[in-house]
Length: 281
Image 1: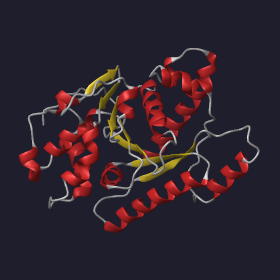
Image 2 (image 1 turned 45 degrees about the horizontal axis):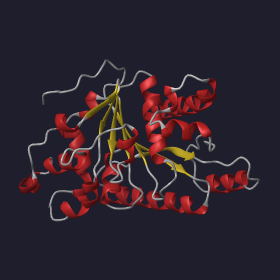
Image 3 (image 1 turned 90 degrees about the horizontal axis):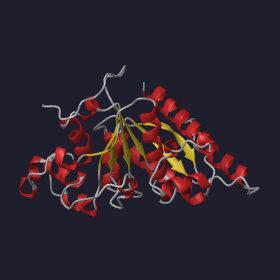
Image 4 (image 1 turned 180 degrees about the vertical axis):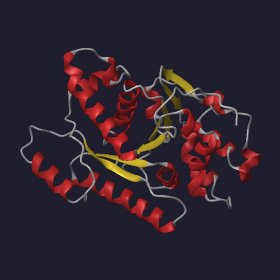
């Protein structure tokens, strides 16, 4: 297949697919995905971001103008032979956006919410549409890292993401609702393993977010939750810092700022990126 992208030389010829998931919304998945993409970029990696959430927040953070019919949803539909009556002439080159040097994005649109209904009648494995799409366009050979921001649901989109990913990061807020969301997602991973249709993604660790150091019970709650999550890595907690609010309001990552107040957040994301890379290699 003709490569429309050029990937710089890399010690790892096969790009890795990393998803950020939690059934519970509002836990910071998109914020983590956005800044993690920039952490990998700062390490010299070429990054592709996939927005797989119909809410399109990931695309919005990159300030992408979403055009009707030119989203990842249409590309996924076009990649399924059985859905030929729904195909159009949209090419991946029409959809992919060069967000900034070193980071491209395939944006989502609201029509992605109808993905499950659209593919309901096909005979080929509906769980593997995204995985086969990545293979069809040889995206792993074009990018060092592919980061997927998933929706806060448990439907077919989530199953597709988990089947396509090499590893998953699980952001959560240290409370019982978020913990249950993690358990629900983990059950989906178990179900995928039992189906034996593809390899299961590696658990790349849990990311405690919005950790309130002022609350006396916060440490106790965090210890109780992390103690129930098994042997997976627990990344350094992210506190509710004003720097996050400032950067997101400007649609910028923490790496866009030179002031010293952003250095600690930059360090955290860099450490996380390094840990993820080591886990997948």
